[in-house]
Image (cartoon, rainbow, N blue to C red; front, side, top):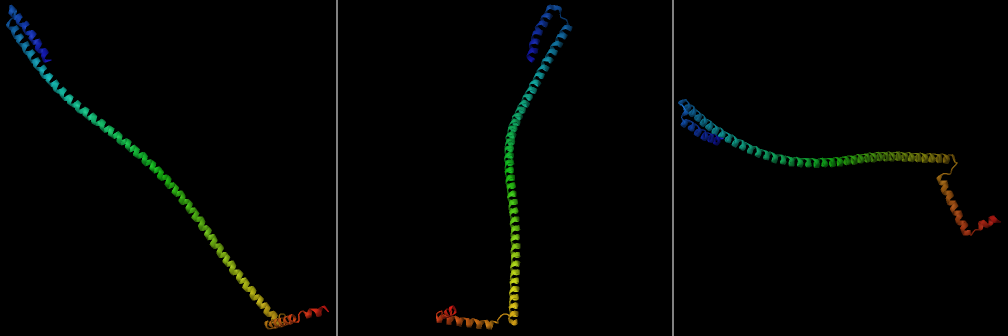
Length: 202
């Protein structure tokens, strides 16, 4: 932009000088020309300053753009890392969920086995109690049978004693004597060689 103003100034000055040498320029024209030249120089200087400011701003903008690009790259890197971390977390979560489901299934199976074992233990306890009750009942029946047998023996002994005292049954001493006589007669019969039987036949 400064170069354009300089070229314009270079073109305008010869034209003005030609006009002055032609003899038609006055003092007012010279002052006006000087004023225009000064304005052109000021404009050129301002344009140069503006261009420098523009270049400075452009450099700052470029630096900011570089920083923004670096920040964007860092953000992309962080985003990729975050995605990788999220994927790993999702995988870990899925693995943990599967492990939890497996553990829950094992716990349910263990609970079922515990329930079955408790049920079998209760049945065994009930059977044991029934067996104990049956054993106690059998023992009581045995005691009762023994008591009845003892009572029966006592009754038989009492009846036998009463009948013996009444003379219906022989006493134990008489039975021994009768047994002795029977044994003696049998011995004699054996010695005779069957003679008593012959006599009976006659």
